[in-house]
Length: 231
Image (cartoon, rainbow, N blue to C red; front, side, top):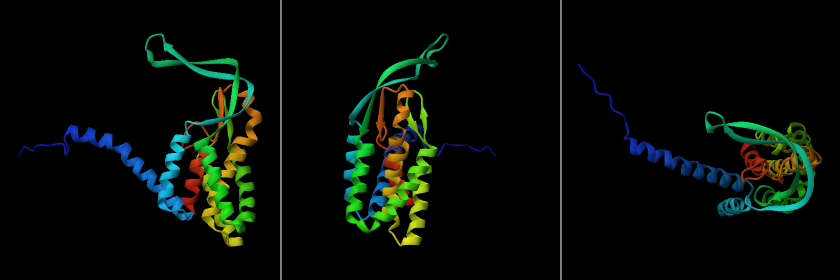
């Protein structure tokens, strides 16, 4: 007996699903942020304000200083046979002026939230100091300079370390795990991965070194969110 095989969905419906995937991921990410800030004691609406502020703030880099930077600059040129479909990598040694800046969405906003938490829970300061020292050491150890770009580090290292430190400090001192995890994660990455590596910027040849990253959901922003979810 012959059998007819049919696709469960038409092609237009399949493409519609593909178009809706970014919206689905966006909703999931907003819910994750809402859960994280709810665990920190903020109202759900605060998550939307922070998300909107981070989206807008990701385009704002506050210049702090300029330095002469010499390094290997990675560029691309069209290949001989395939043009821009398969471009060739070109590495050139150049001296450029590097602008050191603070990203508003990726650094300023997370630091301000950390300050609010410290003011609201001053009894957590000893635990936050200890946790920040540990997270700073790990972030500094795991971060590395990337020529032509800036300082990079594995994104999941800091959240996991921050969560483990917060759990340990809560067991020893009875501190609030969520508050310690967020503040230690944010401040640890800021100090260890960014501030302590500023002296290496001159060797990278990057046109801009943005503390907090050039995008919204960079290491500092994500570290705080993920650390809270893990505790």
